[in-house]
Image (cartoon, rainbow, N blue to C red; front, side, top):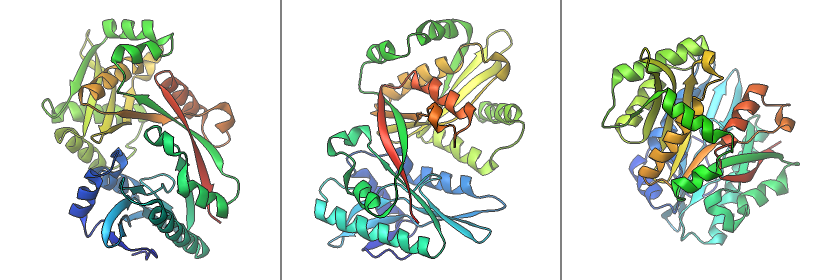
Length: 339
């Protein structure tokens, strides 16, 4: 267990308290849901790497004041600190936590990360201006990282503001998408899998389609089972498209969510039909379902530009550009590497 120099409790030993504290956050990110965190931990495990959760409940004056997601990815004598598979994220504080307490805790956490780096660990940290926190700016996490690291790498994140009426959102979609969405809705037979319509046979066909399209099993069976459980417990839903001529699955997307935020978790589309409107229809139906569920924001993904091609593939940049056609908000982010 990593020893952070600030009062805290282990999430793994206090899962009920984690959930209780999570429920009191002003905004509940999907990535801090207990089940989602366990999914990411399991997904990171391989023959080469193990992944251990070290997430903590932060304390101030003996009471919970925030949550911090952090895991250790270990293998081949290397240790990397992550937050749910990506760069270490800032802690989430309860609204009543004083700024002085937040700054003190953040300094202690970053000092702990630096100590691990000095012992050979690899640590990248992300600082993001999230749309529901825009009024507060980047905050003390960003400032503390900037004071001890070199120049950060710029990142960009896309969101859909689900509180807007759907017609308003639809009018902001990329102009070329509107006729494609209409054509796709006429061409394909869409279906929605929710907790009320969860069907293991349909889910297995989605998994088989994913494996066939990718040419291999990209992750463990356990992660597929966990995602199906998310659907059954109303923490996710699947949007699928069938060819009405033969009922064949031609595309589908899985969307995971908390009470406030949704994310695009997995998708697969018939590569022979890439010139047809598949993803356009899936995203449109998904956004409507998110609104029906009362969610506030949809984290649609990172916005990648041509200057990101030194670390991102051309395919990733292309997918990002497609998603950008639905986004209603672009926010800045930064990635720091501790040395």
